[in-house]
Image (cartoon, rainbow, N blue to C red):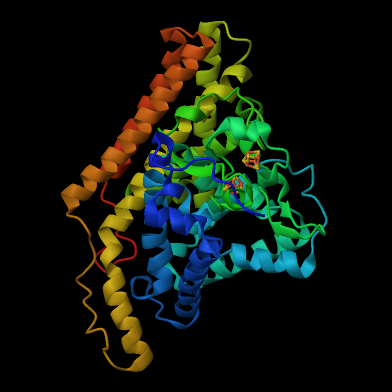
Length: 483
Ligand code: SF4
Ligand code: SF4
C-alpha cells in the first residue's frame, strides 16, 4: 500500500518531529530500524553472557560486571531524560519473544485475574531485593544468569500469551522505562488529529493486511490506539504505528516533559484513567521507595543498620535482613502517602482519602525517577571509561596479545568528583521540580487550597532532602577498581 504524506516542507510540526529530521528521521522510518538496533544490543548481551560465564570472577574486570550495571543503566536513564524510551526500542529480549510468537503461535489472552502492573511490581521488588541480598552487581556469573532468565521469561510468556504480555504486564525494565518516560522530551503521537478522524482503516491499531488477509505490518501490540493515545505510558517506542499508518500521520514529536501527562482523569487509550488504576499508583510508590532503598544500599549507613538488625534479632542471614529493610522502607513510604492523602482530603473536603491518593500519589514519579537517574548517572560518570581497559584486557585474554594496548586500569571517570556531584544533584532537583509542578497542577484542577497541598509538598520536600543526603554520602564505586 502506498503511503500518502500529509505533511511536507519545513512546517513548525516538522521541525519538532524527530521522524522528519534528515538522517535520524530516515533511520526511524526505515522498516528494519528496530531490528537493527536490537541486533546490536543482542551482540552486547552475547558478550555479557560469554564473559559472565567464562570470564574473570572479579566484576570490574568482566563485561558482565560492568556493562549492565555501569553503562547500560546510565545510558538508559540518560536516553529517557534526553530523548525517550530508547532501551525498549532496542530491547534484545524482543528477539526471542518474536521467535516464540512464530514458533508457538500463542492464542491465549493474559489472565484477567492478573491485571495491569501487579505481576511486574512483584517482579521489580524481588529483583531489587535479590540485587542487594546476593550482590548481583559483584557477580558476573549471577549477572549472566539474570540475563538468561530474562531471555527465557520473554520467550515463555510471549510464546504462551497473545499480544505483548511480557512488555505490558511482566517486564520490570519496561515498567521502569514507562514511568521514566513521563519525563522524556519526545512522544510518539499523531501529527494531525483531523487525518485520524477521516481515517477508515485505523491500521495503527489493527495492523496492515494485504488482499488475502495476510498481515503485512503489525499495529500497536500494547493496545495504544494513536487517535486516543496520551503520553508515553506503556509505549515501547517500537514504531510499529509509524510503519502501519497508511497516511504517514504518526511521528516522534518533541514536547515539554510531563505537560500532556499531568491530567490523570483523562481517558488514555490502552490505559484508561490513571486515577482509576491502583496498579499504576502502587507501581509509582513502589518504584519511588525502591529508588531510595537501592541508593541506600550503596552507602555505609546501610551496613551499620544491617549489623544492628542482625544483632538485635540474632539473625545472620543477609537476604532476610535485606528483605526486612526493604519491607520497612516500602511500608514507610506507603504509610506516608496514605497519611498525606488523609490530611489533604480533610483539608480540601475531597470525596475520600482514596480519591486524593489515586491522584496525588502519582506525583511521586518525577522525584522517584530523579533519584534513580541521579544514582545511575553517578555510577556511569564515575565508571564509564572502564570500558577501555576492559576491552583491552578481554582481547589480551582471548588472543594472548595486546592488540588494543595494555589494559589502562587507571581509566574510570568521565567527570571530576565535583562535576559528578553537581550533575546528580541537578537531576534530582529536576525530578523534585517535576513533582512540585505536577502537585500544583492537580491542586489547581481539583481546586485545592494551599493547606490541602501542604502534606504533599512536605512529603516531596522530605524525600528530596533524603535524596540530597543519600547522594552526599560516599558511595561505593561499583564496576571500577577504584572503590
Ligand atoms: S494514526 Fe491511526 S487512526 Fe490516525 S490516520 Fe494513522 S491509522 Fe488512521
Ligand atoms: S505501536 Fe504502540 S508501543 Fe509501538 S510506538 Fe506506537 S504507540 Fe508505542
